[in-house]
Image (cartoon, rainbow, N blue to C red; front, top):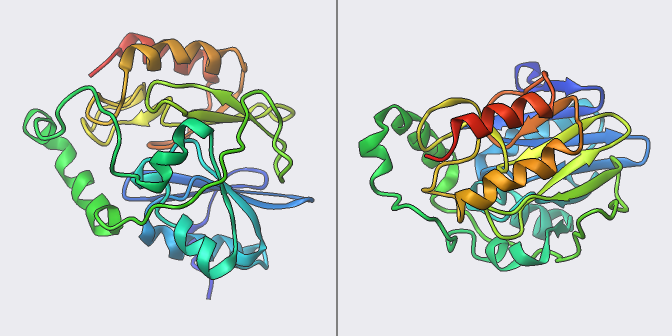
Amino acid sequence: MISLARIDTVADGVFRLAKAGVNCYVVADNDGLVLIDGGLPRTWPRLMSVLASLGATPSDLSAVVLTHGHFDHVGMCDRLRWEHRVNTHVHPEDQPLARHPYRYAHESPRWSYPVRHPAAIPTLARMAAAGALWVKGVKAKKDVVPGVRLDLPGGLTPIFAPGHTNGHCAYLMEDRGILFSGDALVTYDPYTAERGPRIVAGAATANSGDALTALDALESTRARLVLPGHGEVFRDGIGAAARQARAAGRS
């Protein structure tokens, strides 16, 4: 039986899978299905619900496309690869990170954030319960090239937006004005519990200065709908989102 409560349609043919403050997205069009980011391991039931609603199974996915290789974005990738032969694709700079998703650069000590931002503790606990502590890495194909449209369903063009990680890419559906911003721009920071467009805290960001600069590349897309890696959908356009993120600054 399909759980309709777990199916969040954010645009025609675009479905958000939200679990423990982490988003990934299924894109469906006439050419097939693609998953943008792999979420946490226990996002799996939500993936199954969306695919079932489309009359599909995980084996029908053409690929997983990663915005970046952090543990909370590759959680289902290894399972999809071994059980359903679904390959994962990532920018070359993030291929080692996708393989070892806990070995990431961060400019600020992680241990201090729960002390400084206790409101974030429930979200971090939910992430742990959703499998954040036992994610398996994935051997991803390092063939995502910024500016070169992917030969996959969805008509996705990678937008290079480093800073959160060295190889972070957002994905643009240019003909529809939809931008999957990953963690280059979020509307909820799981490390501080702050809401509204922003970059992710230094606890998980390699270089906040670069992340703020990368907002220029996102803004240049002129996307009308922004689908972040954390937080709610932003429907007022990437221009407004980028301005708010710059105003929020680093944390």
